[in-house]
Amino acid sequence: MAAMSTGDEDGATRADAGAPGPAPQPGAHRSGRLALVAAAVVVLGVLVAAVVLAANRTPLATEPGSPEATVQAYFEAVIDRQRLAALDTFTEELADRCDAALGDQLRFTSLSRVALDHVTVDGTRAEVAVTITETFEGGLLDTGRSQLTESVVLERTADGWRISEPPWPLFGCSVRTGS
Image (tube, rainbow, N blue to C red; front, side, top):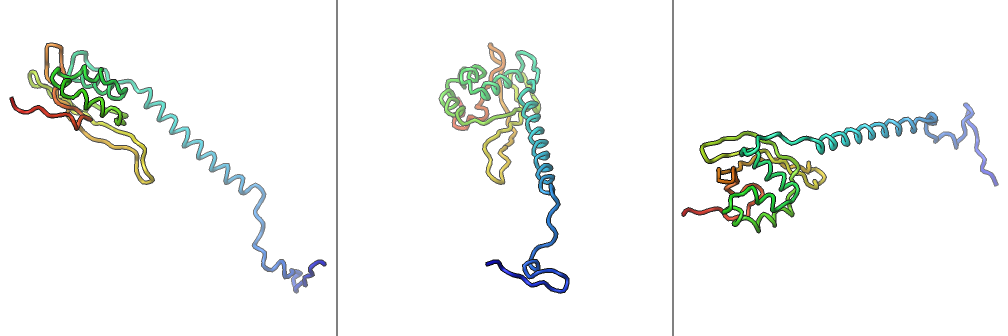
């Protein structure tokens, strides 16, 4: 049996009395979704452009044989996880002390960028200050980035400029004690 409804004075039925306001216009939800999709495409395009620019960034041109060139070679080896190439930038004594620590540390390094800040040369000793940016899997409120400034100490040897003190990320490498 069909339900019956009674009308009021304006012709509305009881079933109509509780109905919400006017129905949404056809396509209203569609235009909102379209704007959301367009915004997502723009954001994605910006992210892709940033990654492409970062990946194709040319390294700083350093003078061959300079302290900066040695530091650049070291960090390129660290980024590529090339232990032997990194050790080639060390003095012989430092390479002997830090070989194992470097091999262990390279597995955990998340280096994404190194920027040269300044260089100080004093005779056969040089100090190259760099800003290191690490990227990692961030949490909900974490940026996934860490930035620190480090100094790399070098000495001039018969083989050219070599790193003479444990550089970042060698925190477990023993430090030379007095003779």
